[in-house]
Length: 205
Image (cartoon, rainbow, N blue to C red; front, side, top):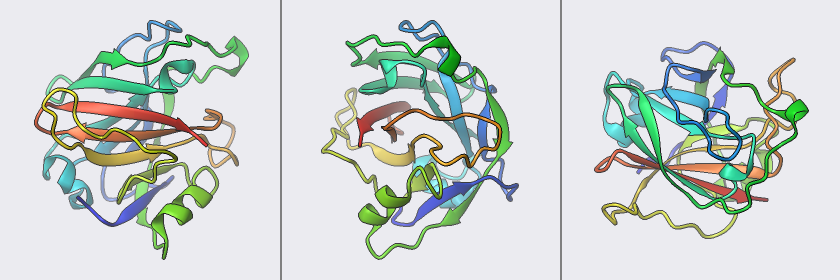
């Protein structure tokens, strides 16, 4: 597992990393009726992310519905990298809350180029949780800085999953004239390369 953590910044880089977009086929959320948001996609040609799936001409999807309580617990997705399609295979949501229409985040999210810059912290855990949502709201690689203990075992093969990314809301307006505010929710992305399964762990500060 990589030990260097990166923050996503909104700029064109050497790789095709994107915030937003709709090049992945995502399922419809049974709770709110929207398609699951493609929050980001990471270019796996980037050697800094080679621990996920090797260096390959594929993208890695960062997806979740963020207009309802579907993202408050755990979500499990099966990924078809060739078809660029994601299927929901499990969700622990039993609250079924839906945000008011006026606050809904659009589907798809407007696409922007992002690149990664290395984060240097003496204390990765404290530094990440202090700055997440302010200086940046997406990180990749490094170690997962969970708010509380989490299950990171793949429910299919029972192997340990790889940590990929963390996403929270844009609390300070990094995105000018656009809204990506998801309250206090933090989403942690885990991946099993044996099963092509993504687990999204939703926690709250």
